[in-house]
Image (cartoon, rainbow, N blue to C red):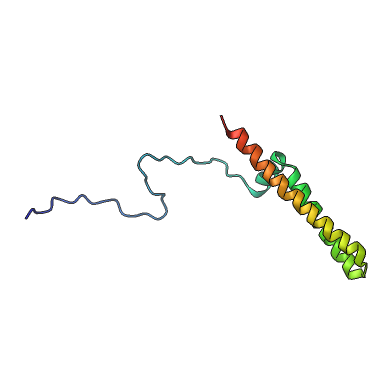
Length: 106
């Protein structure tokens, strides 16, 4: 039987420090981006998404208001408009993703 060799003590686990992974060096952001900065950057990158979201919210709000007032024809029209606005928003998201994927290719 072979006796085990001397064991080198490892550094104790420190939960406040990130783990050390060989061959990996994380980048540290000096100025983390806040909600407002990220929202404005994303809006500049793809301005059609917020426009579609606002259109969806406006159609939904007006449709519910019309339903409450008893104008069923206008309410139905606004619900159909809401569906169209949602489709526009989803299409804008997908086109924005495709454009950013094409832009990142060499």
